[in-house]
Amino acid sequence: MSAPQSYASIVGEGIWSNNQMLVALLGLCPLLATTTSATNGLGMGLATTAVIACSNGTVSLVRHLVRPEIRIPVFVLVIASFVTLVELIMQAYFYEMYLVLGLFISLIVVNCMIIGRAEAFASKNRVDRALVDGLAVGLGATLVLTTLGALREFVAQGTIFYQADLLLGEAAKGLTVSLGDDYQGALIAILPPGAFIGLGLMIALKNVIDKLVRRLKTAAKPAHSDPAAHAEAAAT
Amino acid sequence: MKSTIVSSPHVPRANRVDQIMLQVLLALVPGVAAMIWFFGWGVLINVVLAVTFAVLAEATVVLLRGRRPWPAVGDLSAVVTAVLFAISVPPTLPWWLTLLGILFAIVLVKQLYGGMGYNPFNPAMAAYVFLLISYPVAMTTWLAPSMLAEHGFTFMESLRAILTGALPPGLDWDAVSSATPLDEMRGKLDLDMTIEEIRQSPLWGSFGGRGWEWVGNWFLLGGVYLLWRRVITWHIPVSMLTGLLVSAGVFWLIDPQTHPFPAFHLFSGAAILGAFFIATDPVTACTTKRGQVIFGALIGVTVYVIRSWGGYPDAIAFAVLLMNIAAPTIDYYTQPRVFGHGGERG
View 1: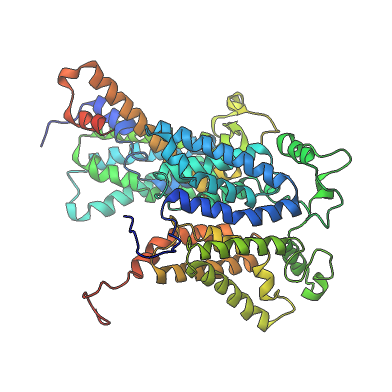
View 2: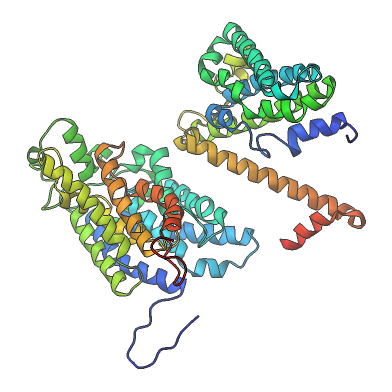
């Protein structure tokens, strides 16, 4: 087995270069369904992060006890327990948020991103790395969910973080940005097509940024540039 | 691949994109003129605005993609998209909605997929649906046809309504707008009125709504011109109109009191325009002949289904978009057999 990854590269991959939603395109159903506002996206992202960090840690702890033949049922049981926990906690402390996200909280259990990390990372790595990976992947997902939620909410209603107090308490009321009441938004943004269009634009934006960064790197040290970037620059 | 043919006098078929698009624009002239006649100068203003926006948007995106703008703008496909879009929207649509729609059509639906020839969806119809879903009120405020209107809009009044949203003094939207024939028919049928009662209203002509049916006739003329110049073939328009007529006919025969007679469906809304100008878009329609017949017929049936039981009074745009995405599959299953390969039983 190759040398274990450094923490920095785990975090970098989870948040950006291997972002589960923008690059692996996993966990799209909560992404598309719950991002009708920035608050919903943030709530969903935090809930997912909690589940993925806990399940990664637990799977990593029991990785030597579980026989490979039954690993998938064990992963599912672990994930389901944590989803139930998160659901009960949200019901107890963020009841309005729980009502808004409703069914999608329980559906975190079938989020392919979580079982994907359990299988691909946690079951092969030490507990500390698995935890860091879970948090980084969760954070990456939260960023995408919140950004897409903010984008859709802004286009459709002209607000960002409307009703943020449902999730973050009274103090968060100041967080709401609003363009005023006579803003005529495009309703399509909070309907399902808006989610697909928004996600497509975000993926495109990420690719553009990656390309610019690569170009800057090759420009900075032309002697040691990697051939792939050169080939791409030549092609365009 | 140009082939020079013997013996005179032949009219060579248009075989470049800009020639074909020019023919389509020419064929649109009678229909657009009829729309201006019945619905006022707003139609023309919308066409001019939309074409300007479309050409600018197309040139900008093509420049951003690092290509020369002229070949893309010069093939006139953006102009055709803009004209089709402009005549689908209400004649007093605020200018910024036209801008939004055109940006959606040209930038998202056409150029992001690779530009002319690569877009899976009809840009004009995608933009129309985008606006209809996003701004339902503005997109359904149609003016009454001129012979029924209490107030005829002058050129300046139309321009002012489009640019500022302000109506001439003493008028409000309720006074100048009117239900479209399809809207009227649906609304009244929902109130359990019979067709006979509904048609008492002065809104109706001999087939569809007054004014509207004539717009349909003039588009039909343009469509026949396209057929004559062999820019389009008969497969899609005929099968689409047949699909619509047959499905309307079946239900009309079952109960003529609650289902409008088939010709009403043909000459109301955008059926004729859709059959000859929109569904026949060579980029987004089927390419095999058998496929085109299936494609057209399915559009016709879908239009009837949505008009009768769907959420919107007219459905050309929805039906065309649905079949656009089905077109590659239809093409796949209707490939003509290559001579010498396989037989009836493979």
